[in-house]
Image (tube, rainbow over all chains, first blue to last red):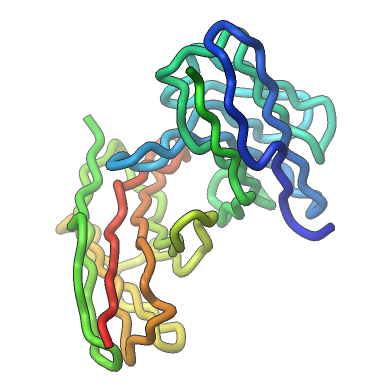
Length: 113
Length: 109
């Protein structure tokens, strides 16, 4: 593989269920990010990680958690999904860190009913 | 608060030139990015400006005026494949990207 992969491509989830969105990159980038994209709004940062072993909160972190056990993987977990978390979720990575260009995965379309 | 403004939608003709404007008010400035996003796909990087002036890259150019909080993306010799949304994003003082809602560009033959 080359670049960033995300799984699943799409998912329909019942409210209250736990869900983990997967993100893997093979570019050995230090920094990784999770965004959500909703119609009429700009991308909003959920959580980020500047390097393996560290994570930080973005603009809209409530209801989401992340971990960064290694360089390649950055899963996003919804502990108890709610309908307002219906969105398209994009994972991104950048090489040297925050000031570098971010490269995006193909996205996960999540619907919470 | 932080704010990025772009027109919601623009229409242009194949072969023509179009300018997409972006104005911003952010806490600090560490560069401005333009991304292209086709419907149902991921955003892809187009350009980065951190100093005032024009950056040209093929058919696409991006301009920045930091004193005016203003940027534009100029697309020349429009092609049908340029139909997409164009996202403006500013890196703030915390080195986080603040994104505009995007401009949907419709190209007509």
